Image 1 (cartoon, helix red, strand yellow):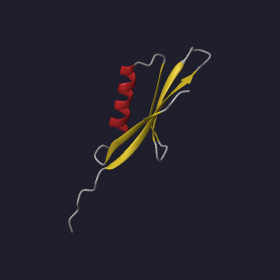
Image 2 (tube, rainbow, N blue to C red):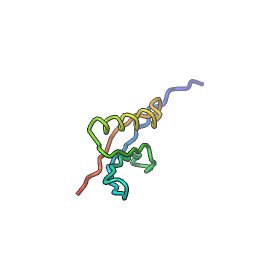
Image 3 (tube, rainbow, N blue to C red):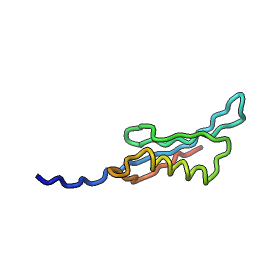
Length: 83
C-alpha cells in the first residue's frame, strides 16, 4: 500500500483590533487573530501604540508559530470593520 501525501488544508483567518480603556492606562489596543470557521483563538497581543510594523510582525507570528505549515496553508485573511 502506498501512502500518498494529502493536499494541504487551507485556513481562513480573521484579524481584528479592539480598544480597551483602563483606569491605569489611557488606551490599549488589542490585536486578535482567530480561525474563521472554528472560531479558535490563534494569536493575540496588546500594545499602547500600534504601528504597521508591529501589526505585520504580529501577523507573521500568528501564521508562523500557531499554524502547522506542513499540513496547512493560509488561504484568506479577513479584517474586521470599525464603524
